[in-house]
Image 1 (tube, rainbow, N blue to C red):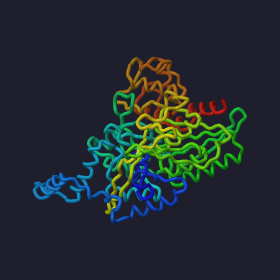
Image 2: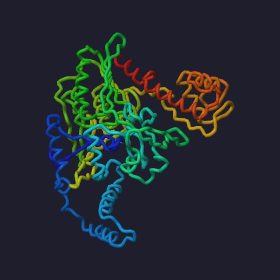
Image 3: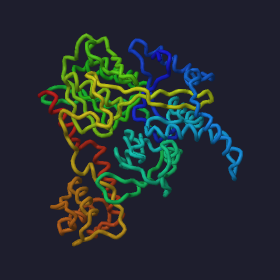
Image 4: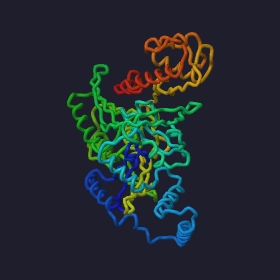
Length: 491
């Protein structure tokens, strides 16, 4: 199978963006000097109504296929309530893919593909989060920067159990996403199970237009050295161009070091990440390797003569996935620091094959490997400098059935105490016992936030605490991972 003839995409998290389009972001695998040509060829392949790529092995139909035909005819002709032919065919395809046990190999029907194309072509609406199916559970990979999901406090590894009170058990990823996405201004209530919590909690999110800007840059002066910081929130169609433009501007300003922040970045287009890596990975080292079914590895190289003359660090967390991991592990293996926590762990490559009627099968064909040949799938990229964020970053929304008050003990109280401490209201303990110091901290918080100063945590106080914690996290005020990356840069 020749690379230049086949429509191949790297599904960066094998996930669906929970937007109005509810579609995934993929990428074309191509050598650097063939990238533009490859995109054009793939667009043609998408419109190939003959389904050439999908049918090149059709002659190899097993003898047992007559059993499938027999089952189809039996159901269609005899089922008591009648059966739709198209539904049976699509169900058979979905069933075959389900038996693989691979969350990244899926069937996208005509409607899903239409939504995907709408998202690729324009902005979209929804909650703005990337999800995957992990151990049968719909799991948040990462909320998108400045999206409703991020503002509401959704986090990587949150499991979505219910949508508007309806269980997602038994649904595939596409079906689950269809329930979560929706139009701007509409509300959706997600029931979330978060790691470290004993009970699920509900989160109400108002859908909105999802921001599509993916590159943010600034400079900071550290120990007298001008330092560039570039945050990448996704690897979209214009990301590499925007990155290169902003990197050049920073270099024109005379930066002496660079931080690349891919925390919460769920992935995106391969062309985008490879064009970014060409700025940093010299020609004698591959920036990525692709391994096929037979174990054959194909390395891809830049044309860069030498590394940058300034230090670089990459900041990652558990929401950094696939393309982010390609970038992080490539820079790690050529000697740069990776700061933060271990990344998501997505190291497989999918081929999207159109079936001729507007539907598509996305099937795992390859692995991607690091420059040194390491496969990070399901293990992630480990940081060279491991740094956790402050404890209050990992607290959970508190749902109050009975108010929390002095002399009570409860795991919810421990969560409230960590929130209060993170906001500067000292409780003197975080073991879940509601002591007098905690009561005084609650009163102080209530007074400063125009709440009735009772010293009791009711739902109004709990919601206000949650809002203030989310606001403080998003402000970057206590971003110890970024601070540590800046400290390490010039050591």
